[in-house]
Amino acid sequence: MNVSSTPSMLRALSAEHRGRLMRFAREVSIAQGTRLFNEGGRADRFWIIRTGRIELDMRVPGCRPAVIESLGHNELVGWSWLFAPHVWHLGAEATTPVRAYEFDAAAIRSMCRDDPALGNDVAQWAGQVLAHRLRSARTRLLDLYAPNGAGSTV
Image (cartoon, rainbow, N blue to C red; front, side):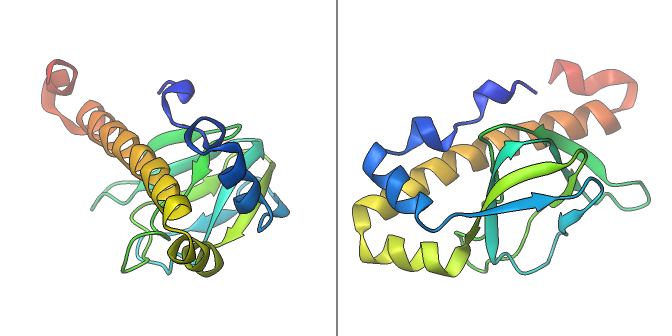
């Protein structure tokens, strides 16, 4: 999947809103092979990747988890924190060592409630990411599981 088609925070948020959000950022290092979250778990944080790769995956009954997308520099990892019931819809694993900015979801949601313009920008950004991820998931699952390559023509 084309990484540049995923909206980055740099393109989606105004400089003022980016700055306010980044005040809550905590720099973290994530070891290769670390599972960040699993489907159904509590979505209480999110990340913006500085370096490294993280794969998003989806459980498929009777099969290994299907990799939906590989994320890298400046990409948002996690959107489920923003929308109730705040439960992860996919899983995520670091496929290389990762350096990222980590954000506490409750603090950011509170900040967004207090500043509707910021909340709108963050919701628009997350919504664009969500739409992209849904298209990626659909395409990837059709490629993996459609009989005789039927997914490539849909």
